[in-house]
Length: 487
Image 1 (spheres, rainbow, N blue to C red):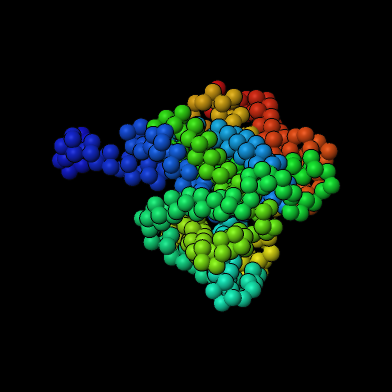
Image 2: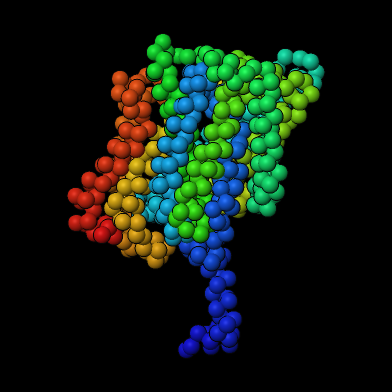
């Protein structure tokens, strides 16, 4: 029977249009790679999209945290060094393969970890990371509202009080409601908030420089350096920024699949992600050291005065919800992609609410997380730096930038990316080694470190160790067992 007859007498042109529509819908969900004709972004479009993602209120938080360790001169150097290294390595590991093949990032990870192993990585790198960020941003929203109410009433703010907790809970619930409505509402918020955040950064930078000259700012000391050794304080600041750079690992690969080619997928990350995030961090750093307060919900009112302070706090609260909506939507889309059939059967609004339960618990029972959020950020680098090392080695050195799209998207149970029961034990072992190397060299919880940390950081050795283990063991064992379709 011909295809024409099988499809109810449709013409060849109608069949072609129907197939194209089906492929386009599957590609949008990540079930199929995006064809070159379906990709939306050139160089500047992707640069703008990256900038909109990176210009977020968490940049103020990270910059303020840097001010705890070093002054502005060393802090700006740490921001530039850490972010550029982290962003470049993360981009090499994720955006190049997505840009070349139009493949969804976690589908591509089947080639490194197996189809079940990629689910494990998703839970570790996306679910836990996003839950932590949702809690931190919700608490920042709550502190903004508490500060706004205190400023309006002429009272002292209570950053850990009941008002903060109630407002933070409300932020998570409103975010759930917004995302449950779908991506259209999120797109509207992005178009408004991203340019406005640039304006807010410019205003804050102007106000800072109107009080002190740039040379005076550079001479200011750190707020609360934990070590007498200034070199060690500087390396910790670099490590925090490396963590910030690596923290983009779960997100930018799927953005890059919308770009037209590999170059367009890679280079805009330098202008967009690095440039925008570094700008926000530098503003947060300068404000923190000049005003003696690392929390942006406090220094904004100090630097801007009551009227502008109220407007800034209100805007920061609103902008936080936009950031929360972006990362929640991205995470749940990925969860439904890598999840089992039972997960995909859960209604959209229900799975969103279930995802929000842990952030709600953190807001209520662990509000202290906000003040030490940089510890949470640095912990994520133990995982993300190792993932970057494995991704670079696997895609560039073991596979020669060649992936089999049919095998990645076809039935997995007997496919070449099955490995061992759907898990690649080599990739998972390399990931574990990278994480262990990181924690041995530098403990994010206590800031205890080995002498080598002062010269190597912790993220770079973890990245190199994970990549080296993955390369050596794959060469020794994977090809002989027919695992992973390695050449």
